[in-house]
Image 1 (cartoon, rainbow, N blue to C red):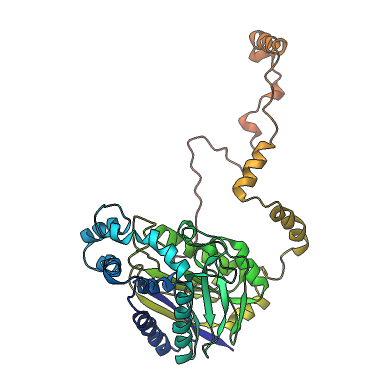
Image 2 (image 1 turned 60 degrees about the vertical axis):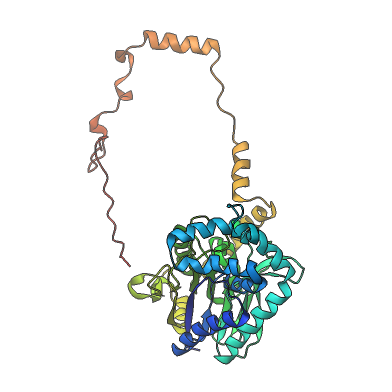
Length: 414
């Protein structure tokens, strides 16, 4: 297949009161993506949690949904609602809700089967109705072993579930809800193999390298970031993952209100984008296409030319896929990982093995040094021991402490 059109969805977080409401939200984006002839549609991290609104009924449910949807109306009211959701105002709605962060983990655990059924039905129908591959964002669900994980699923154009990918490396929000995954998977499609990095997994290069060794050509990264600086970091790191493995990359962001209450500063934000190695993008930017907003909804699509990617593999300026010294890394890497220490732990251990500071001179040595300094004058030092300006190599100008060194940059602006 010479190319594939990919759509990255930028979707606003809402707690929908019914499954049908969430399905309508998904369908809205699917129609837009189909109009762009997308063959792969990627939804953002945690978008499946929008189904959690169906857990709550009566007054409890109305207060919960109101706390989320009201963020679109007035900022002062947002602050009041956030306090309610966090349970910081006694006798307010938070007291009745118990706080979303407190209520949701238990609800997910108790209603995991219901959540799974709804998630699978909605995204399976979306893929089948529009005959396209769909990555259904992610959702906290019980895995096969009974543990809750941050899971993302890939669906085929006929609606078949091709498989799940769990997040391996968790952030602060994840640890409130789930445990880490234990495996990575490359999914076979008509246009090549696809790998999924859920959220901040992209910060850990080992996962992407494992997927590259499994033949992945398209790296999908659903994201939910509550800090703009974090979203920028994810973007920069994805550019590196794409370049160092010479593959395509897709990032889809959750935006809008944050009812999960873990980051007080607020909203989900980010800029959904599609990436490729610098050599096959305009102005060597590494960016194929990106959405124009960091907080609003939308989608961005572009055609990814797999033939151009394969040609790059055959004739690169630096053959990172072919010239990696496997024998060297085969010796160096396994002992490091078998030790089971993180970088922080290893750094502390290395500091503890450094040699101790040099011992202080004994009193006799100190007395001898003092005597030497007292009776030695500049005239006692041989001329050859003193460097002069004439010793400066020809053609080299010595720099004074006041001189600045100017480093010019020819970096192209994106």
